[in-house]
Amino acid sequence: AQSVTQPDIHITVSEGASLELRCNYSYGATPYLFWYVQSPGQGLQLLLKYFSGDTLVQGIKGFEAEFKRSQSSFNLRKPSVHWSDAAEYFCAVGVAKMEYGNKLVFGAGTILRVKS
Amino acid sequence: KAGVTQTPRYLIKTRGQQVTLSCSPISGHRSVSWYQQTPGQGLQFLFEYFSETQRNKGNFPGRFSGRQFSNSRSEMNVSTLELGDSALYLCASSRAADRAGGELFFGEGSRLTVL
View: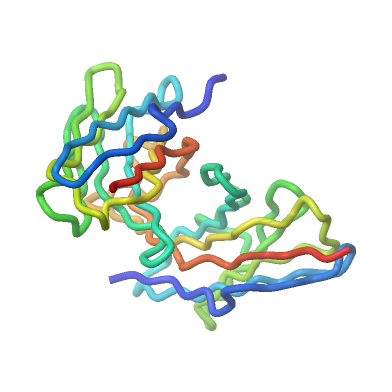
């Protein structure tokens, strides 16, 4: 079965600093990979997704992520963090098999705090 | 374009009661999934409906059920509520019909508190 690990429960960065959130997945074939963000009291918003092709994907709000098959990783990056980026970030994996439908398996999440 | 709408946003129930949550997907989306989010277990998949048929189901007891109507709107029901059912229940819709692992669009959730 597929699984997702986000090693960092909390991360604090200074405003303007760069950010990298780690995500490792476990799945035997090429997965579909996603990063979602959740602000307090809100649902999840998709930041970016990887299905195939270019391993560096660009998302909304200046985020990007790189798929590294050899490391089973899909880390999220942003060159300069803004205070409004403070939220919880979830990495998720989907399976390219019809019997799985649109089911996603989520990591435990990483809470990002931004200090001014 | 309207997003995914979930009602009610907040509700309080007591143990043993039942609850029904509603989800209206984005227009044109035929897949609706439900997730339970708790501080201890995180985001867990409940089930997915596509064209009124349950396509996939997570590891939850039979007290959790759902259905989808011909207009793609979905409801989930939890019977005989337990304290541990307190959670944020998220609904997500997707356009993907013939391809698995589609992009999900989430609603803001229904916050259920069981006393």
